[in-house]
Image (cartoon, rainbow, N blue to C red; front, side, top):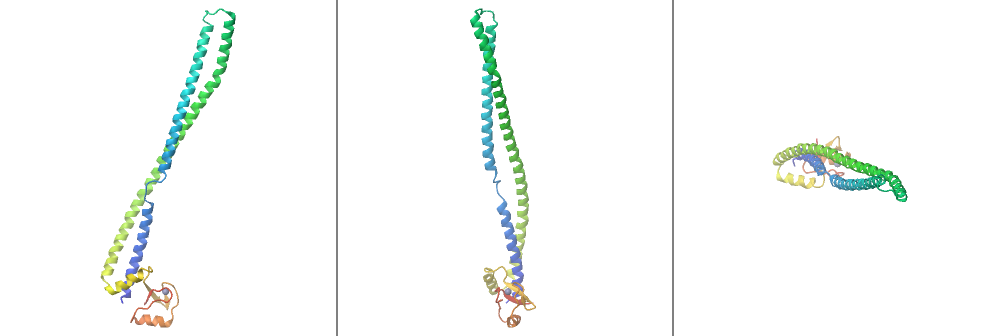
Length: 231
Ligand SMILES: [Zn+2]
């Protein structure tokens, strides 16, 4: 049995397994930005809120304009000179006074509505900027991952070529044994140095080491089950 050939093959196979895991890890991270959906929903909500706030400003403004027009009309009637009746004049004066008293709260309400609308628009801008910034970072990371992906894919391809070359050099019987063992564990062959199995670090009984050294037939490590190769 070509234990040396198997050992060479397993080292390349182990490297390839690791490269494949690395590749999978990279592929798992390549995706569309997961946060965009939620952020887009929030942006839509914020736009709706801003447009409601704009509507409130228009309404508050219309209320102020109506009140101002009423004051103007009352004022004009009062000082037109056409009304001479004392009681009517007094009534108009009272009306004018009360209409003027009502105006400041209305203009205050308009100012408040304008402030609310400004806040709503600012929040929308902030969300837009957040989305743009987050997307930039995400896209940059994705480009990095693409570069890493192609590098690791090249490693996997190169290791696969090496695996094929090594497998071509081995006889079919050894390959069958190798594949059978490798389905169960990453390492098929373990080197024995100073009577110790390099895979599991157990000190092997001398009889096992001697049997493995003779190499008449394959000997497994009693602890980890690897085929033992005495170097
Ligand atoms: Zn062992």
